[in-house]
Length: 253
Image (cartoon, rainbow, N blue to C red; front, side, top):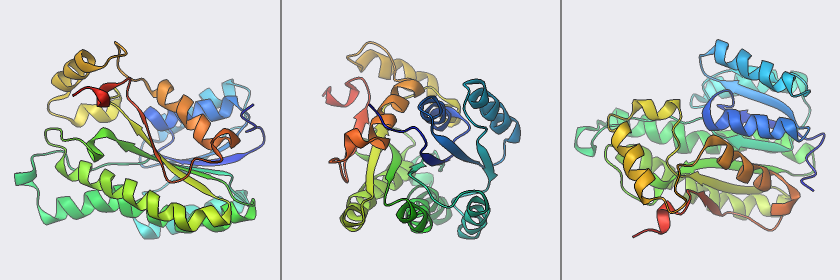
């Protein structure tokens, strides 16, 4: 039903956390993977081994910081050596400064916006020729509830995610006529390695669990299943939208 067999996908930050879960889910559907990572080669190799264990081809591992324009150019240069087209792009790599708004410096602010919002624009611009070579494709950008709700120490990241979601809406106007769909997948609180950087991690997990109607926290696999939908023809009339996966957290007043 998903019709993903034989497709080729690039996932930034695809070797850990939610990105890894999406990679594994796509691999199970017969998708050939290209996974970018920043520094942790060991984690990248482990993810590649898990994908091969599923009977899927070994993914192409590309090291580079997608938030740095020159590194992104190098990444795509290497990608094109191995692949002539892309069917799917998942913009998952993210970072940012986690601290109170009153403690943010201009450098903190700009860097966070660059890595979470500007990086998506750069990624789409580089990926579009490869997506067009396939006749169009699917782009999924990962966001978080902080784009529309306030959390302690999350001012810079939340603002950058709000910018990302707005950018996706505007990009959809330009990409839809070209046969490419772009949407946002916004996850609730997910207990991944990224959450260890939050000084209030334990409180955040405890409070999120209390107010989630589903009775449990969202897992990376939960997010990955919705990503499969957005990457498949089942979502062909979904364009420029933000789909939230939070177990009902955001509907609770």
